[in-house]
Image 1 (cartoon, helix red, strand yellow):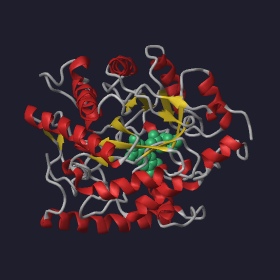
Image 2 (tube, protein in one colour):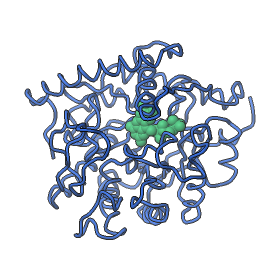
Image 3 (cartoon, helix red, strand yellow):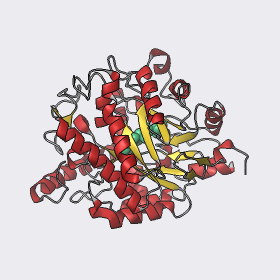
Length: 422
Ligand SMILES: Cc1cc2nc3c(=O)[nH]c(=O)nc-3n(C[C@H](O)[C@H](O)[C@H](O)COP(=O)(O)O)c2cc1C
């Protein structure tokens, strides 16, 4: 056993306690039933395993609040309580050994693939750049639709609470719908929902308030926010600091700091990061730490930092700096699912390294998602991670799953088994 500040519990404003400072960050599992959007058995088995990982907090991969906001085939969809029974089993399995499970709730907006959502919605009609025809040009939401989506987020949070989840995390990062509202590149509105930074943040704050009304004061609400989009004309660190201040005023319990979006994938340590970070970011730990420090300068709300954190020394230093209260771990949890316990008991000093790189930088990010998702599926099947899994095999499996998913998506559209769009 080692003495480590990572073992200290954290009491959140809503009253709940996270047993230690290590969190499994959200990773899309795509283990939802493709016809109904409910959690599959593999998802429950996966969280049974992560519940024994030693992480104090487990954040689910994104759960979509609306069928029209799906990001991938196989997303779990919670837009009413039809899946309550399976959601309860998910929450129970994950929390059987003391970890707390938060449901990450999301809507993809314009980052919804055309095949799943032929007519996606967004704050404004701004098309995705650089993906060929994969994403359809979105249409701008009208006010009643915006209000309906705010209500959808609140409903999903209430269902999570009913099912026994310990909290929710609103996904306001990585270029999805809430993040599209925050960014001047994707929000060109000049009404109550856009035009200046304050109005661009109104959608996010309205959702937080609606969730609070739906769940009451004792249920933690976390928010995942970009430190910046790392794109010219996009969401900036100054705007992020202002939003953080407003979130603290809105009694948010935990702020996770990340960055980037599909067009500029800084969350994975690439994309258009600033020059000083770009050179070494792929091999550097804690690549958003400097931004967390700046956000800490304007808020006392607990901050979770995710992105590249691998060694206990770096994690402890981040806590000691007081800029960070919770360490988020994503990719290592797929191939080293006992990592938190081993960092806490001193049998490991750092996550084992795996380097998933092809010779083509452009496809590396997609390749990584496939490789790590393949490991998630091994765990969901009740097997051990497959460290020998080749990148081309992962690509093939991802491709095959995608082909099947296209068929399922069409079937689901034809048979109307998925919940209706808000
Ligand atoms: C396969 C995969 C799926 C992901 N899905 C999500 C998601 O659903 N929601 C989210 O907020 N972040 C998602 N992320 C991003 C991670 O939460 C995290 O921000 C990123 O991987 C950097 O952390 P890491 O260096 O510890 O992996 C995903 C990452 C991977 C690799």
